[in-house]
Length: 270
Image (cartoon, rainbow, N blue to C red; front, side):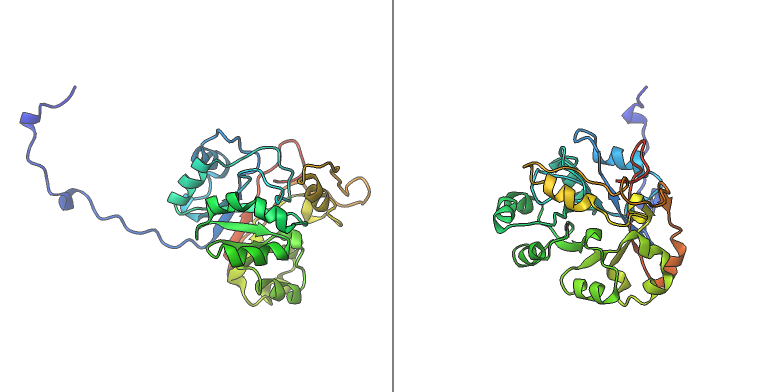
């Protein structure tokens, strides 16, 4: 039952009822999280709440997943779009970036030109592109200065020299999962604020050869190819999903982390 407006008291000045909202403190760590396998019709914030509800929204720096189809994708085979334009707009309005996984090993100039409509659509300072091929990085730096360029984990940067060389090209880089276990190596990295470490890991943690990545690069050209995995040919420990305790990395000065989701009925993440 609604109150009779004639009986309402005069409005109380806002300052007597509400206090000004205080800005949130800067998070100790931020995360880029996976939208792999998200149905395109699933609202993005409902998805984040369901899959990453333990992480405060202001700690999610970006979300990675497929947008429009392109032959530049790598890492995982493209089946269908995962993030719609509406998803990206809502993320960006909340200050959360889109990370486009253009991690194919092989990139031609013609393919790059074909991808320009996709790149034009999402070109904004809050968004980034994940890259394996250095030629693609140079073209994007020249033509799309607002994108953040992330060197992919697929680059397998496992020496300090390679890390420093990559940081001359990329704004940030993702290190291989296994380096999480080498604290001495990590501590000697100079620009820790430009490094993304894995917060959890799947089968790539113990994989000796990672045949899947180049095979997926071929498959994502949509002209054939066959998925390859080293599990049948090379022994390794299958540990399932592994969560890393973040405190040691935070204490060393690392603040950016990549967070996967467990692949249902499998021993890995995606």
